[in-house]
Length: 222
Image (cartoon, rainbow, N blue to C red; front, side, top):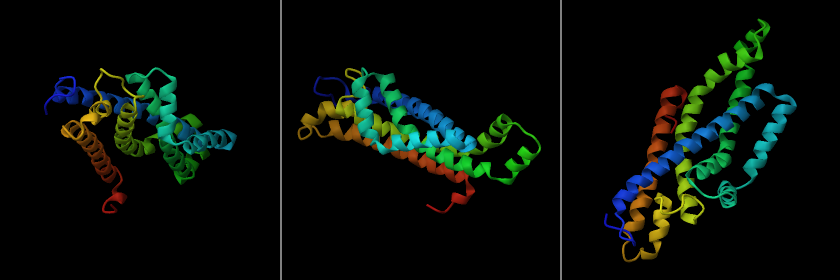
């Protein structure tokens, strides 16, 4: 793969950048999944004014472009690996909250939930014994598919200079550092770009496979 403009081995930096991208992808997506699940479950299960407030706040967050909001937050705080992960988590939880809210609302109206209420089951028992276990397949799929989104967003932020800061290698800032030499050494841009594409594609394929396994009704629909 050669070296970059400062004589650093590109292959070594690509390997280290893969670690950075995966750490941010897993951590950011995990935090976003927890926040989205908490908001969606509480809004769908409690309903009333609590559900209305939570979902209107979710709608407000969805009104802002995720990339623009992430750039603003990253610019306010000192960019670092963990700050970037938290910024991405704070802009990526809304889709999970919407999906979880819809499924929780549907589950809350099912016959077995009504039977549990008739038998005098507490809200905590219904939530933890019946609602949350039914959400696990959806959360697993969302968690897998979300990693590709966080990896792409991290690469974009690093390319724009508000993500992982040099000299720490990230696939996004590797592309940014070498874009000046695109005509003379195009592989310095193509290789990290292809790595980002392949990683996102891999997690999307895994997410689709898990969806087919965990939800048989989806088989053959894609």
